[in-house]
Amino acid sequence: MKNALGLILGLLFGLILVKAEVLSWFRIQEMFAFQSFHMYGIIGSAVGVGALSVFLIRRMKVKSLEGNVITLQDKAPRYKSAYLGGTLFGLGWAMTGACPGPMYALVGSGTTVMLLAVLAGVLGVYVYAALRDKLPH
Amino acid sequence: MNTFVEWVSQPWPWYVAGPIIGLMVPLHLILLNRTFGVSSSFRHMCAAVVPSKLEFLNYDWKKEGWNLLFVVGILGGAWLAATVFSSDAPIALSDAAVARMNAFGLEDLSGQHPQELFSWDALAGWRTWLFILGGGFLVGFGTRYAGGCTSGHAIMGLSHFQMPSFVAVLGFFTGGLLMSWLILPLLLS
Picture (cartoon, rainbow over the protein chains, first blue to last red):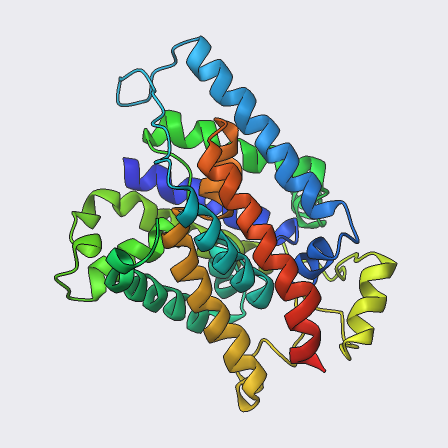
């Protein structure tokens, strides 16, 4: 059930990423050069709807399908890793023109060469896992 | 039916796409009892495929199988967008962005990305290796180090006012601006 629902949400998300051009390298460059409102509008309105949803879910003590009252855990307060890791991710985002969702959407919409970016990303996770104890968090 | 297909096929404006992406937050919480985040899938794939004694990769990734099916869904949804709901409309970049791309020597702006950089044929050039493999590596490494990506930190994290997510987003833009303004012009010159 959970897998089927995950699949359906993914279908919707993949469709949006292509139709709203979020997977476009050009759009990402345009965003980082502050030359269009498009990407800021998407991320900003997504956060607005997300924040309102979280507020309502908490206020109304909404339950999940599994029957429990939904609670949100705070992110671990690791600020060095958030900033340093975020910066490394930002470099990669501006190079590939794709964060993880759009990377998959590029593969699905026919830019199959981006499979190599996904593989490189998995390798990146492995190297992080190996170096984790030595990195500042 | 045809009008529906035509309607979906048009490029979606930000004020339609953004709020639907935002709905991923409550849909994940309510339907899946999980938080929204895409980059964890890299970790699950790594844990599933690479045999390792590393602590970070030793966990029951099968419990997060829904996340991998979410990825399969993205592939399928993107495929639908490129076939059933395809559109010939070029990306409506701003004039300033077009001028900047042309200044980088990128003339063909008809696709989603520069064909001379992002295609199998382009692997003949070193830039493509760097952009795809180097960039992909940084995305995988950076998201795990930061603990999330655009979805997990920027959308999910900011939606419940997480300070680490705010710091991570500052990092995303530090890296992105550095690449876009300083490194990219050098790489494309």
